Amino acid sequence: MAQAASRWLPDPGSGQVGFVVDKVALGRIFSEYFGFPCQSSFYQIPHYHNHPGQARSEAGIVDSNPTQGIDVWSIAPNGHKPSYWHSLGTEPMTHHTIGQLVDIAAERWGDKEALLSLYQDHRITFSEARDKADHLAAGLLQLGLSPGDRLAIWGPNSIQWYISRLAAARGGFIAVQIDPAYQAPELLHSLTKVGVKALISTESYKTSCSYQILRAVIPELDNCPESGDQLRCAKVPSLRSLVIMSNRQYR
Image (cartoon, rainbow, N blue to C red; front, side, top):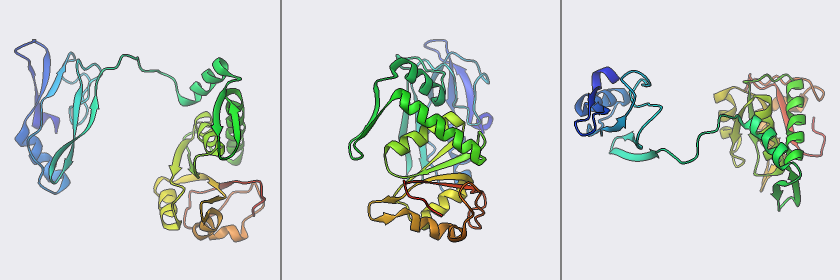
């Protein structure tokens, strides 16, 4: 698509290399791809220092060192709407993972408060957050999860949600954050769409009993094996483990 609808030309004013879009060709390509008419009034991408092909995506709009912002436009039947503006910032990008940042924060601010949950009347420090996240990550690994597996977190903002999210980062799992207001159809769709292997769920949310919703999605819970054994769910074949945020013992 980039070759058919774009070309690289030097800017007469600065001599820098610019990316010029063929408006008609690109509009036609997107119209064919999306199946509805798209306006062909695309815009010239700001100048780059890079040379053609050095950092180009399939659409030819990617560069690692822009000299000014990139205006990105969404495609819609009623035309283009500005959706994102990217520009150079004063702060350099950090090259740390979230899991590494948990370590850095614990070492730098260990005894300082990391989180205060007013409605739970509970607070934890950065060191406690790391320790709890590591314990949970280790438990999930013991249950059979591997780095790269999808871990769904279904619940409201809470200490437990925060620790679960950090545990996903520490264990190398892909966090799938699910709206706590979801009912059975939405929950089932979310779990099956990405192939969730383990689910951490709240016990209830507002007036909804999350466990009863889980029983509708996973009817096998009524005859589940002993705690620690893997699930076998017909509706969600990928799901192997369920963790409930509760002090109660569930079967």
